[in-house]
Length: 94
Image (cartoon, rainbow, N blue to C red):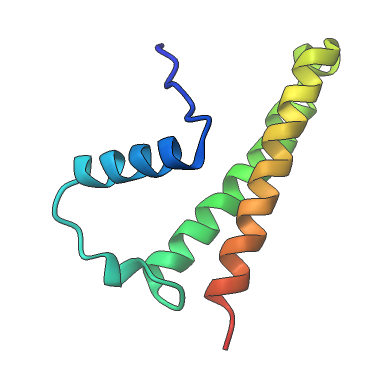
């Protein structure tokens, strides 16, 4: 498995986002804006990944046994929770 380089600046992040968007091809983004089923699907997927991170990473003996692993898994969990909240805030706003 190769590690995808994580952009470190906002400009680099936006450049990477645009490259990833171009890579997925011709997608009607209007089907994925907040309030649509596509956005709800992203929120649901985030929820599943959040649960999996809690159930399968944070509770795994290999993770629990190593402070660095536990810290990193916790950061993933926190980031997924923040993403879930951000999607929900926009998706469910009316």
